[in-house]
Length: 564
Image (tube, rainbow, N blue to C red; front, side):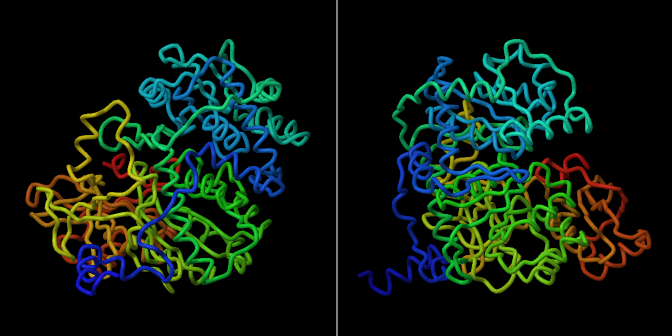
């Protein structure tokens, strides 16, 4: 037994441990699997008869996913692709995604997730940088690939269409997508294969066993490229499995507080190519034998609300912009939320006014977490039994250390702002083929420097104040855009807001605020008066610009750099 002084010193070094919910260990324990391929093989058998994924009312059981992913993996092997080869996936949330995802992993290859809305320039960079030899792409985006494929190493192209795994209904879906909505621009890629044809071919082959261990690379997860060029975070099987185990401990707290359904139904609105949904929905979901309802286009809010109404769903991971959009939909507010066990917010700061309205409408708390592509992704989260939204990113998960450091790399005292640094088994192996970039972000003692500024309080909870590079410097004072945006968004007539710094002769920079209105009675004077009441002088926006919408990533994150 450790004596009281040892415990006290452990708490002094890790103040968050004393705030852990009952039953959550400081250490995550055993991973349970050697690889994600082993996890897929075990879970698809264990949960064979359960629904694994549903898209547009068509469901796939774990047994069907097992057979299809093995066939897909066997087909890849038959092309001469080997362990470690990179295979790009460029699709929205459709049934083909999990089939290809687990097929690639079970064949011992590496998944390169690609945003389907990429421009040719962005796609070319990612394919070249990763050295992908094959790609699976939805036909809607094949015209983009056609423009760049000759300049990449891609030799094998599998093209799929929306309805490919939807049986008879699929023919109608494909007709509507192609002919009615005209969502498939003309394309031509000689030698490509169709998804249904390669599955049929793969079913006649046997998936060859591949020895995969925890240090093998599972994913090249490209980060948004906000600092120069987009880089591939190298995530091993061990990294992702560690995050699954860490999340498991945390999620059990929600079930202990609110009961665990026999099968957990996940609403998967965030894209699976994004690290948040990839780990939390596709992989944690499989580990739990859960049922993921895939939403191909969450921007179609009325369509998404219709889907929400069809299921007794338990788990929903979203972003501030998505929560906000749902709250502004009348039909959403009429839904029955009695089955909800857990709502997680991540990807960007959840604003307090949005969290409060969510609580009013649904009776549930949004639990904010934090992570990055480089951390597989979850590093911290609020305890899932907390009675209300905290406005912090919560506590480090089991086996995770958070340090708040100054420019020289020294730990700063609790309560002081510094860079948030993360150490744990979920932290990436490095950036793909970029040792210099890896060296820039990894400290000598194994911490990943996140580029986010924040402080930790005495309970071990961390509050983000902003991205280092988004910080606005007004007469030597730091202004954090998140704070200005949150104040603006608390006005009932403002839908969304984004703050940036613009050059100013007198003070170096001043704050400029972009506003999307809910009603036209909100004038510049109204916004300024509201900010004046809530922000000290140097933080108040000097310029206001009204917009119909704000530029966002496909996941819904506001792009401040485009506003600059």
